[in-house]
Image 1 (cartoon, rainbow, N blue to C red):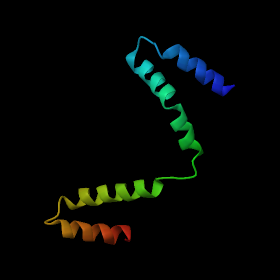
Image 2: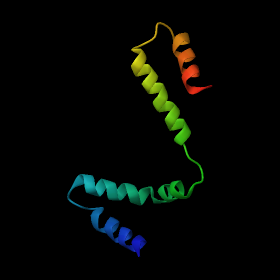
Image 3: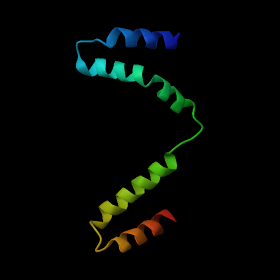
Length: 81
């Protein structure tokens, strides 16, 4: 039932006069398989995303380091690697 409603919505709005709405519909149509595969995948990139956010936070707090060695040392200390 929900799958049919989504399909009907996508068919109706892929040629909508609003460019944004039609682009969303076309993107979902083109990437449907990849989106479904992602939902059912047992893998997650949560750990990597958390590490990336931690690195960004360290860079913001540090306002720059004198050299890369100090930055990488701080990253290793904070991330536990």
